[in-house]
Length: 349
Length: 279
Image (cartoon, rainbow over all chains, first blue to last red; front, side):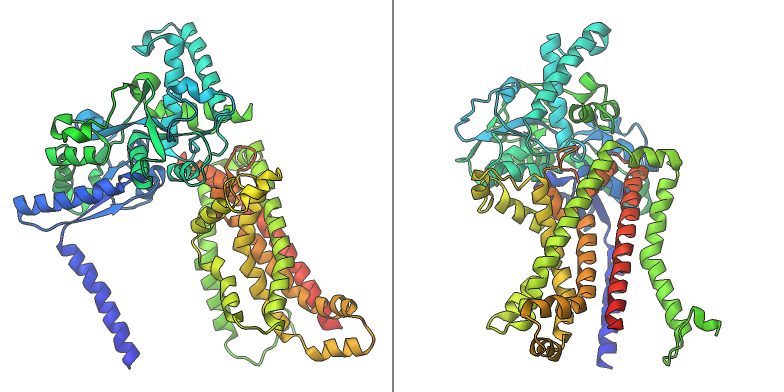
């Protein structure tokens, strides 16, 4: 009898939870890995803000993981109200496969729907013993470069494209209006870029499955002379592991890493969260959101709202975008990273 | 008489109920997800399926996964047997602790064991560094993959062989010894045949576990295309490209191979236990 009442109590508890969950409005933000710390603080701020202006307590649930894995979860039915992922391609796929949000989602928010951006930098060992200052220095004989597998890691795709863009610029002299470059010249330049990237990947001893794995390989195992990393992750690693062990080197040219955010319209509409979700996303662009983004080492879309000392950490460098150089993520993904793409030929030739 | 051809007479009642229950349960837990898997790959068509399965990269990954799994299971069969023997036959203080340690790989999240192994076997690790100076690379090679598989497979062998050793009748051993057979002969001719069925089961379980292993292997494998890419990694790679059909094709190929292998091990096992009953 005693155990029966226990079970009954448990059942009531579970149902009770379910019912109470219906009462407080909830928001599910499906994000990628390194935003964990940022969104933890941002969500707390937003809940406070919402309470102040609407006198309503809301609950924000967060989910983190590899970007493509998170996108697949949403495709397979995870009821995300907003997605904040590592690259536009993953959100494009959600839109194409499910129709939960319109195809032109990127134009809905400012700055291509990126409230914050980052770039690819080099993390080297303290004192920079191998004298690495720019992309060319990565091809020194015997030097080991750590970067994850672009087939499985979104972050690694940015690394690869940054290297490709650099080599392309070296061959062409510029990256402006590539659509106007004469096709023969472009072909020659792409050949050189392929050569550069092929040699670069010959310097990669391990292709970790994800960005965190690659950081581990470099930091904990002591393998490699340089780690290609997102700027915000490089700062986080230095913070966690002590500035006496590593330093950041900023190359002359890199890629503008644009992690976009968007509303998943149909999910949010279905459980009456559209108003909160929209406010949540625009709050990312508010002074509070921008200040926090800079605090967590993302480059804010509106630097005027960020703290001076946070901004001082970001050195100036030339940045190109995926749209300018590769014609967008869909094309880049198909040409370079899908099976049989350029990346595969590096290893299969 | 005709009914007995598919149902052996038993004094236990409820045959229909228990058969129905077994089929329903297996259907829900095992067959339903598997058929979903096959359905997902159906839009590839026969040719598309073979094109993926037959590509050099996938074939290499099958070869790597199967050979490392096989060696891992083999090593586990030998050393797991010794450990099981030791745990049953030798009494000492702290035996319970060692006994509990065996199960640890069951409970450990595989990513944790992967990271731990990589730490130890990479070139600045405790074991990796001395081996490196001997010119043996472990982490990021097939050897590393095998070691990760050994770790996750060990409990399967120990836990299946242990009860069999416990049930061995000491009288048989004594009889064999008193009738003039040496220790080695007693072991190989009297005891090993009795333990063989459970050893084979343990081997099969460890082998199957190794084939499906992803979490711990990716950390130590290095994931270099054509060299240290296991099949599960290729499946993940396909999924990252949102190529569900391609991923399931690789999985089905793996499944068929594993099923054939496990089925033959099972046949071998039932053959050896039938032989045992015949003695």
